[in-house]
Length: 391
Ligand SMILES: NC(=O)c1ccc[n+]([C@@H]2O[C@H](COP(=O)([O-])OP(=O)(O)OC[C@H]3O[C@@H](n4cnc5c(N)ncnc54)[C@H](O)[C@@H]3O)[C@@H](O)[C@H]2O)c1
Ligand SMILES: [Zn+2]
Ligand SMILES: [Zn+2]
Image 1 (tube, helix red, strand yellow):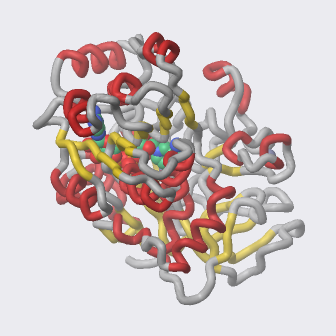
Image 2 (cartoon, rainbow, N blue to C red; image 1 turned 90 degrees about the vertical axis):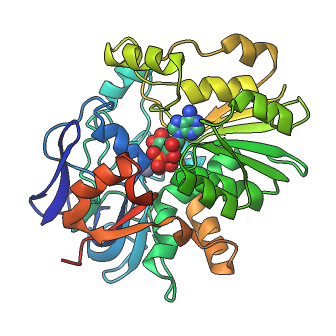
């Protein structure tokens, strides 16, 4: 089959690779109909996630048709149309039973590598380094889905791929980021980053009852999309973010702050040079500018909800601000399976149509070109969907 594979920094290629096979009794094989490129893939593309190997198949946001099942798959049958969750989870362990699916103890065969870096391991994730299991991803014609009963949701007839594809990751991710804020009527939520995750965080904050959402980015098309979702916006290249947020909230600060940017934050000025240099010298794994700003801006007693991905060890996090002002910090790889059914219900009810975020629909063969376009935010690119069955 054809698959989009990682070959190094800024080098991905569509190659012929062996077809996936059933390995365990609870596996299913999907023929992929739609697959997306995620902001998280850019961290791999830019070489910031350790333990990638040449030839690794990328992709963790995908859906398709079940073409083969292992003998212990109960819920699915051949021919079912399903969306898969990016966390791979057993459904039975201590964490899965609490629906903390991204913390599954049974799905990362390389947990020992993650333990060295993080103390404990999260779950396995498709196409996201050997430290997180070395699973082949879904930017491909076919994919193996371990624990297929737990990691998939069946899609009812009448819903298009584009309306449900993002149940795999970015819709639940934006939603969990907002839910972690425990929004009350009257609350103002600030969202850093108007990429796909930020867009879903904005809309989810409103779905959960926020009074106001303030969205921060620098790309006009992304800010426009945020406005279309009801947000007030700040272009961080035109205005000081902290000062503007204080002006907009009567000096108190937003009630809760969402970081939908993560480890590769950009910002003009000295701090950017500082972080870039430390990151390049491996003295710091991330550029946590947004996390610092979100902590400083958040009102006393508020929540800083971190959806953006961080990899390792960072500098100058204002811990004193967090501690003295009773901030709550909530974060995590998204527990996607916990959100798939309720968010599918929201799509079916017409509360939201997630396809609003798509700007590019292309063939699998075009993935390498699209990684560049998405990385550089060219051609007003916000979200790319790959169609492996179109040539
Ligand atoms: N927690 C999870 O399970 C999970 C799931 C999916 C994605 N993510 C992470 O969420 C983050 C966002 O993903 P995405 O797909 O939206 O990516 P993206 O790259 O499309 O969007 C990031 C946005 O942040 C903006 N940005 C950069 N610096 C900023 C700053 N200083 N202030 C405000 N905005 C700034 C960029 O302009 C860009 O629009 C990534 O780190 C990704 O890895 C996490
Ligand atoms: Zn993702
Ligand atoms: Zn588990």
